[in-house]
Image: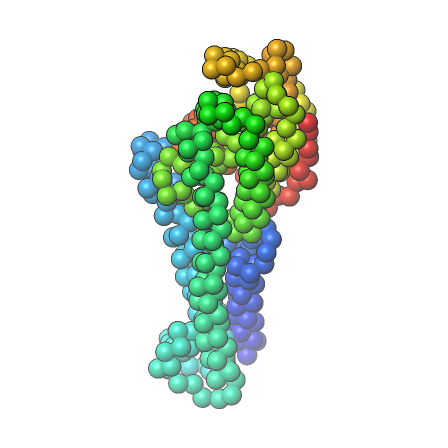
Length: 368
């Protein structure tokens, strides 16, 4: 008798754990993913990374990783339903005492609302009705989850696609500034920073509430939300540090919104970073790379500030706020090649320092 009570209690706890995990994953509008979701996605990611190994071509890796997000969602639902089936199998066994085969038979029939396994008794019928309701509820959660997910994906990809026209393929901060200069739109950069400030806010909200969106890849293999974010942040940093033009406070706001957004997304994956870096901390961009960028801008007639030493210090002071998280997110998502971001974040260079299960929350320290 004691054993059956313990078995029933175990089944009840597993059911409750599964339902709470589903609610936290789909309904709760904040970065508070369950242990179950993390186990599923991290286990599945190991399989995908094995198939899309670093020795493969990027085209192969991109095709494989494009399935990671959708397959992860389906796997999550399968795990939810499997756990509920197992939990109610335990409870049916504890109550009816007809053996494990009969308990599994009744649990599966109830969950899938097939009704081929009849049960007798008020308690057993109540359990069957509850399991059937849970099965329908979990499937309904997935159905309602997908439009929200793909709506956020569509909003994210609109500006990413438009950036290809403005910054080239792969996107480059220098190319972006050159193109705006050539068409005489340098004075309209403030509109760009406003659009991307909103984009960063939207991406932060959607990608922390639904972390699987982080791994949804763009329709085109050479586009990616991480490299687009890095390009815009670098372009804003170059504008503030180097361009001899009227002050652009909107660029500073876009930069702040950008690195805070990337940090919050990094927090949701437990990626370690310095929340309050010093302006003179080292960054992944070398001084000669910065000088080459300014040379390209100057050669095209872009007006630059005369003091390059100060410009470098100002640029580095901005870049240090998002340098490490940008590279870590590029590596985490296997982003395609782009200068000053994924080109220095490949697995052969470094891997993000991710805690095993903990979801780290750091205050977003602000410099500059």
